[in-house]
Each structure stands twice: as C-alpha cells, then as structure tokens.
Amino acid sequence: MFRQVATVGCPAAGDYENRAEIATFVETIPGPTTQDFSNVAQRLGVYLMIPVAEVESSSGKYFNSMVIISAQGQTLTKYRKQNLFGNEPAYFSEGTQPAVFSSPVGAIGVMICADTYDQTVISQYRKMGVKIITMGAAWTVENSGMNAFRRYARSVGSYMIASNQSMGIWLRQKTLGLPLSESRFRLF
Image 1 (tube, rainbow, N blue to C red):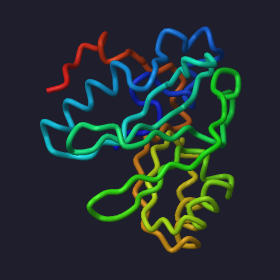
Image 2: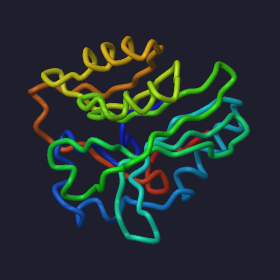
Image 3: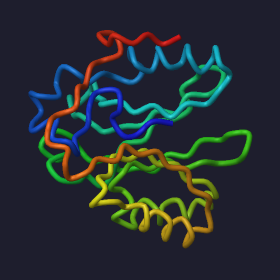
C-alpha cells in the first residue's frame, strides 16, 4: 500500500497547481503503472494498493485514484477520491462511488486522504457492511486526519489500514514526481 499519488508526486506539497502541470503524469487504468505493479504483485504473490493520477479516456477528466491489484496480478477495482482537498479541484475531478474488493481476509473498502474529512465515504461503507477500510494519505504533521479516520472506522466497526507521507511545516520545496518508466528505480 502506498500513500496517495505516490507514483507522481504530492499535491499536498504543492507539486501541482493546475492541469497543465500534472498532465504529463496522468495515465489510463489500465496503463503503464498498473501493468508494472501487476507484474510485481504476481511475482511476489501479494495484493497491492497503487496510487495513480488517472485520466479517463472518454471524458479527459483527471482523478486521484487507487488501484487494487490481486496476488495474481489482476486489477480488482479502482477508487477515485471523492473529497478533494486544497487546490486539487484545479486539476482533479471528484469520484462518486465507493470501491470494495474481496480478499482472503474479507471485503475491503478503499479511501484516499481527505475522504476522511467528509462522512460520505464512511457512510457508503457502513451501508455496505465493510469491516476493513484502507487509505493512502499525504497528511502533514499539522493536518493529520488520522483521528477522524479512527473515529469513523470505529463508527463503522471496521479495522483500518493506512499509509501516509507526513510532511512537516519545514517542507517548502517540491517533491520529485516521475512516472515509473522514467524513474531511476526499477521494479524488481
């Protein structure tokens, strides 16, 4: 599991101000990032929750998405962040649907970062009876939604699994976001 949009940089750090700045990093699902991580998931026999800056080919809209890949390398579902935060509406569109996938430990719901500030997503999972909720986030030290996430997970009666990139007030420079194909790192 990775934090939100980990494969392309971090909106919370100010990496993107508008659609033009993130345009070179968006991709369809399936696409290069999901294919690379599908190979890794299959090779290692693990489930992966992969962040993707998605472009919907039919509309051209951009989404802050999470893709769930099975241990067999299959895409199980994707989730589009519903509660955009800060400047995200300048380049991302809001998602509208919850995403649940079956795993060996049960049904798992997916959230992204600021979804925790609005009870809409949690309410959707409560109605569905989801008992495990995952979330990739990019909270700063000063703006952590973890308490809200815990509170909502308890209200649903679910377990929670979260990953985060925490940034302190001292962080003033932009992070480097490169597509995996251009990264100096290789996936296994």
